[in-house]
Amino acid sequence: MERLENFERALQDILNEYNRLGKELENLRNEGKMKTTKFRELLGKKLVYNMIITIFKRYDLLDEKN
Image 1 (cartoon, rainbow, N blue to C red):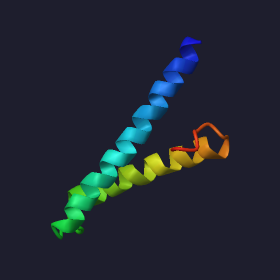
Image 2: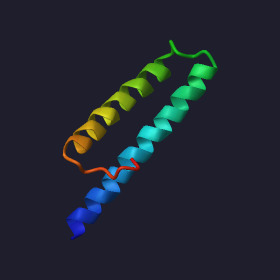
Image 3: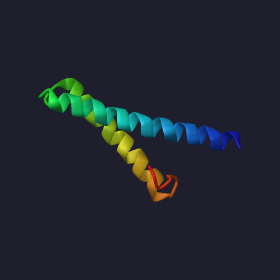
Image 4: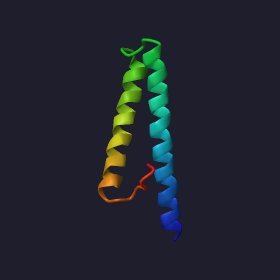
């Protein structure tokens, strides 16, 4: 049971970070900073989180609301 709880917390952390990165990227886009190193680093991180989320979806490990 503890393992499942740890998985649920980890998944929620991944989803929260993915959403946070999206908001930060949007702010940088609005400031016209799309060619900065920071923007590219954040975009790379968001893509990694997206790949992880895609794997979870493939195995039906996400609720429909996510």
